[in-house]
Length: 210
Image 1: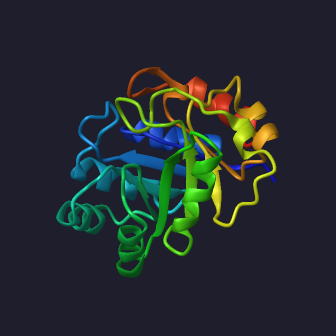
Image 2: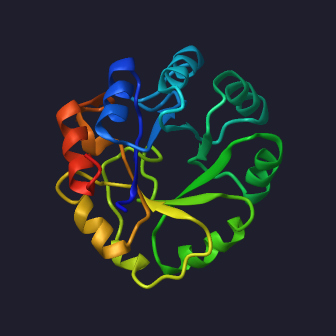
């Protein structure tokens, strides 16, 4: 089976429909105001409903307060809550106990030491999403990390690869890392926050899901 595919940063009904029609297994909604892909709660809830159980819906949060996290998860009710900031294993474990959703943690993969440090998330995160180290914004920057860092690594938590993936390089990323899930955002856009249907199709075709 080809890897699972998450198309992240969707913000319109048309792009949600396209991702589902073209074969994505997951979609991501970003609730983080500095991001060009930010969607407010009303929009996120509507897009989550539009997905209609056809794909898993992830809601991305970055260093959100306890109050905001509770309000967002109650309003949107995602299948997955994806933390993309400096959230601790203790915070993830608390959310996992209280919310009927998968908990994912995005981690900027800098070096082999990062792979050792993520063991602290065992039991707290359902999936680790390896991304490029954070720059001005956490994620969605179009920057890739050194895939060779994952070669031969024995994973103890379900995982996936993000960061700088495009229709042109995703097959190589899968071949080099063996990723069971790939996550794309800026790599299928025509401008920051503007998804390109043709690029989404090309990405899914390159993975083998279109």
